[in-house]
Amino acid sequence: MDPVEAAFTAIGTEISTMTGHAWPIATAVTVAIIGIGLFKKFAQRAAK
Image (cartoon, rainbow, N blue to C red):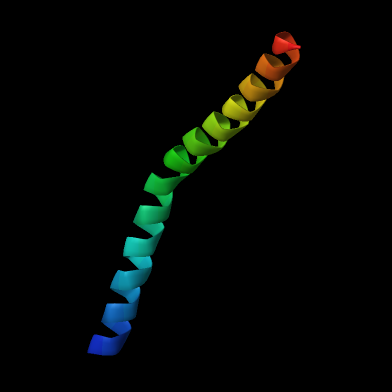
């Protein structure tokens, strides 16, 4: 295996690992944004 191929293989492995770690964070952020939006919506309705 030449060094360039080995480097690209290593980078691909790292990206796969980081993507696996990022999904729980992305899910938590998405749920938090939706939750904050819903809270604001219902708080404005309750204030009327």
